Image (cartoon, rainbow, N blue to C red; front, top):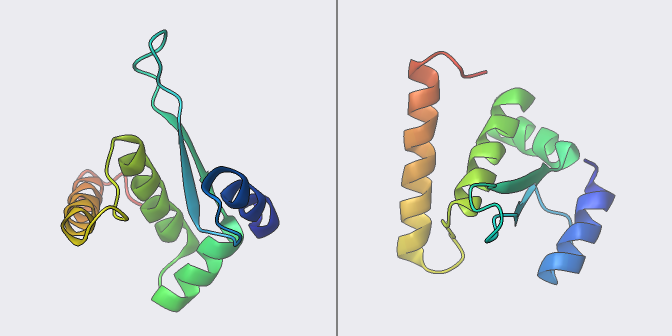
Length: 105
């Protein structure tokens, strides 16, 4: 996805008039309670972040995908500092599991 497209989604669904790196859209309902949702990633923003953080684009996309999935599972770093710490800790935990099982990029 491009920055202009994710910018429009961010404005429409979150009321934030700027591009972002990742958005999550929950889809679970009473009919399909096990349907998690969609994760949308701006490849343009991810590429800039990867360069700033000095790692590859696939690594950044993997990190953003994990972040987005955690949002779908109920984590929300914007609620409080303690929730942000909890979410960040879970992100690192998932990354470690991926690296150990060699599914990482």
